[in-house]
Image 1: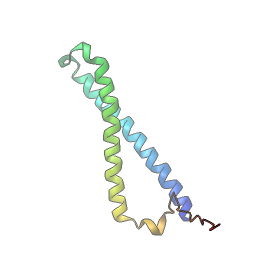
Image 2: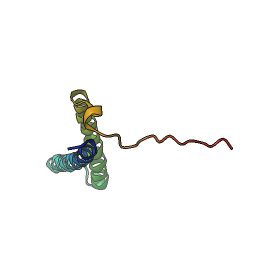
Image 3: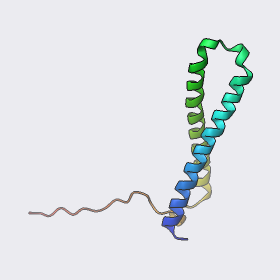
Image 4: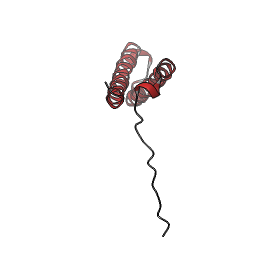
Length: 95
């Protein structure tokens, strides 16, 4: 495989991991809320699910960052991946 294909597969895999982690965190936090339902007032139900949604996104982002930091230590990025954004030299004509 070439570098561009490795980069595309990595981006797809990382996105898939991030989405799955967010869904898993949402279900886990929802399960904890259901188990603790008797301890929490009924008026806070809508706020709780908003908090669960935001917390699951934050936790998935933190897990993504930790995994990415670990992978960057183990893998030589320049050897296997192509840069996503490339600087292009634009020559200005001296007219």
